[in-house]
Length: 254
Image 1 (cartoon, rainbow, N blue to C red):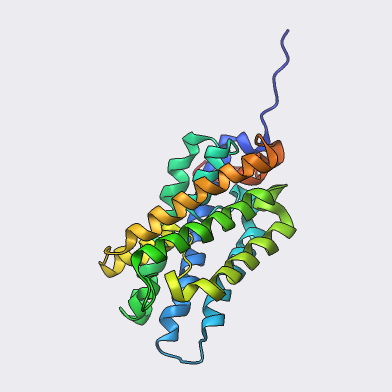
Image 2 (image 1 turned 120 degrees about the vertical axis):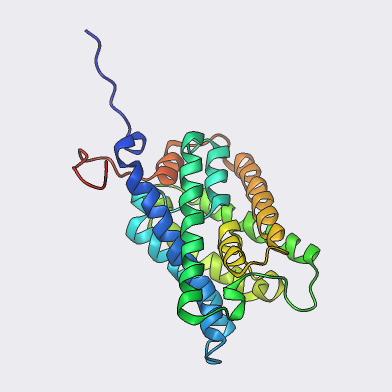
């Protein structure tokens, strides 16, 4: 009689709805803070550049801590694609994650518009005054390559990298913003930019923030292969979360 093979926790399909929800909720929080700091800054001059760029880094750190174990806390299609290309995340789960992230971003931008009005470009990321679209694109490629390298390189356990990784990723996002936000807005996330652009009805510069992060993510995957070779089991656990250790409970539509 053949023995049944145990299903790894991160492969348990019963919790996929929770994982999708965690991506939507986490991306909503990220965008509402990142774009919201800019929007509120139009009403209150006390909101400085340092505050604006530190806010999303701190929020990403918090999201990784409080629900990264559910589904990896990607919050960014560039990160999801990087994990999939790296071999840490199954391609059949990619569409669900991307859909959740986009929904969370649009909901955040809509919330900001309903609450504060159509001000501050709804926190959209655009090339800064005096900087060309080409320069902004190059900066987004560089920044995202660094961000995804940080994520892949510290992916050593659940919560999409564990406690040290949460600090590293949040710190990197803030650091990148300190010097590069005046150039490109330091988006590093296609949906962080696309949500506000869709709600405000201006897609003229959106291509920068889709192409740049995607190219940067591909570069980071290549660098990670050079540095560490093939994908590891720890990276897979970090990318997919560990929810599923306990038997599924009724509810949540699952």
